[in-house]
Amino acid sequence: MQTIVQVVCSRGKSLRDLIVNDSKLSRFNLAVYKKQQPGRPRGWAKVYGTAPERRGALNVQWHADTRMMVCRVINRRSGRPGPILGDFIAYLFSRHHHRIKSVNIIPN
Image 1 (cartoon, rainbow, N blue to C red):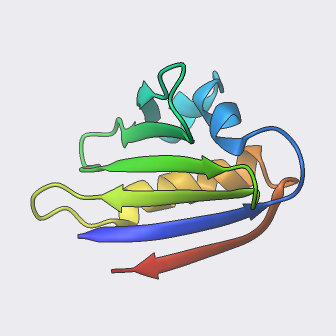
Image 2 (image 1 turned 45 degrees about the vertical axis):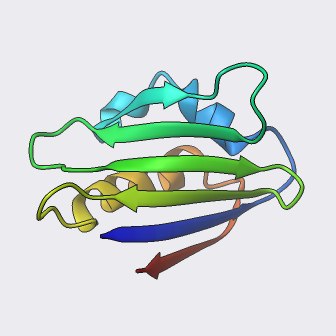
Image 3 (image 1 turned 135 degrees about the horizontal axis):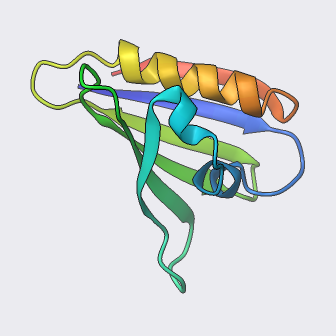
């Protein structure tokens, strides 16, 4: 099951970069697994849940021209998107609320 999360932001640095380089990400049961390799287009990262009951990951892309971050929540096995999605949304509103204009969650 995949769920799409769109985060529209105000002007500023890439929200994906801020997330990848945030030392407090682990407080929200999240960790960066992979991030963009130099020389590749479009910023992306893979974030996964560190709590044992969190199955799945978030594939995060930053689109600078529209100032939009698009995340795909990928679940393994019979995992539900709610727990990891809840951790991620809590993180966004706790650490980056001043940049967020809107959040759209699209179940698929």
